[in-house]
Image 1 (spheres, rainbow, N blue to C red):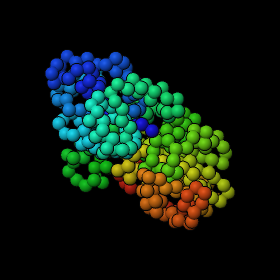
Image 2: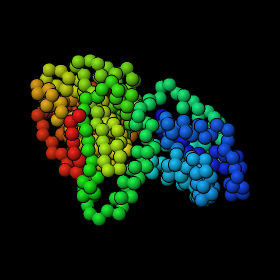
Image 3: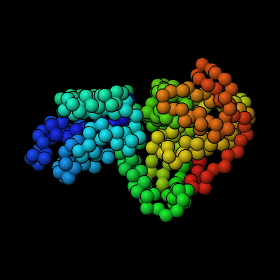
Image 4: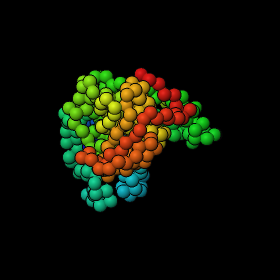
Length: 341
């Protein structure tokens, strides 16, 4: 799934070379296209040799500059610009689409990032297909994805100037994690997390909406969500866990946590809160099971399960089966307030 589109500027986003003539004009439909991609939660960035001062000023004139995250306008090779964008946005190369008018730049991108989607500038109008894709999950969090990342940057800047330990810094953010039962209005976001999240996802693969929806209606199934807020804003739903309940055991069929909060220990905290909630609501539970299906990017799930106290029991049709004997009590960190919703 494409999560980010990276544009060249000269003769790609606009006609002309801005270093030669600052009165360059946008190509047809570009303004509407960029706004629509942003509203769909598709991130935008820039990898261009055009001067930053001139380019940012022209984009500001059109009201477009705030749409672009971590724009790379410099004389470095395109591969270095793209590498910087991937690192700053914490994205895998197969989730990025790069558009440029220069055949050399396109060849360079294909060589150094073989899994990246690379298009010539002449194909830019095909981006409307991303906007109108009916199978692309869309939620309120999608529409705020760029703003969430921008808030994260403010948090990083605050950390850089903070005097004290990292835990002290986290405590200063007044973080609140609210864990609750998902409602019908949360279905779009839970499906989106299940489809988009690949690092903290025990299933390792996207699952269809119908399967996710079954956890919202069946008596023996529960869907839990986690919402996060701090001093810098409301991040919305950052985690989901789909649980099947029987008389003496619970099965975590799927858990997924947004990579946007990866560095704050939210994955383990969210799952601790869910497990405690399950024990409270279903006191007859003696065992909690979870299957792990390995994929290219979800290796850290194994570490996460071990931190929670799960032990590998063997292989199943859904991957390696892990089990946890309950009751179990977890110590929650003091730098996050965990609430029940």
